[in-house]
Length: 92
Image 1 (cartoon, rainbow, N blue to C red):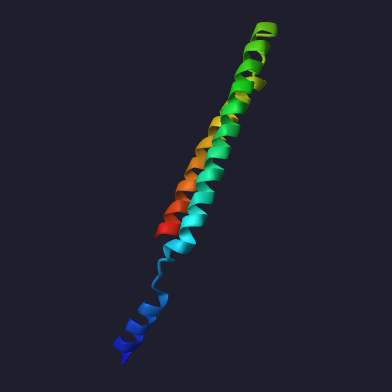
Image 2 (cartoon, helix red, strand yellow):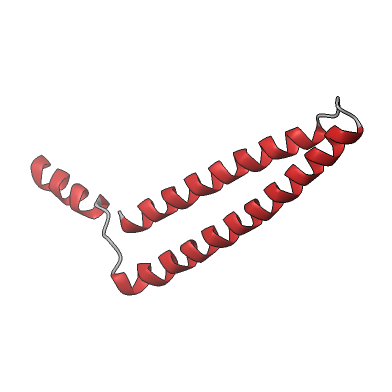
């Protein structure tokens, strides 16, 4: 009796993979959003590098531009990790 209820609980808790008709459009949207995010990160990195070069030539001890570059790099790593996690959850 206990084995039957345990087996029934395991089958009801098991994850079912959604069909490709559901996951394909979501995966395509995630890919487009990731490319858009990295385009924004690239543009902001070029802008921050130009700002860093300008501020270093005007006042060599200014660190605000360097902090901006570090923040952009951290956010881009977080975005790539989040998209990978979302893709893994959808295709699990």
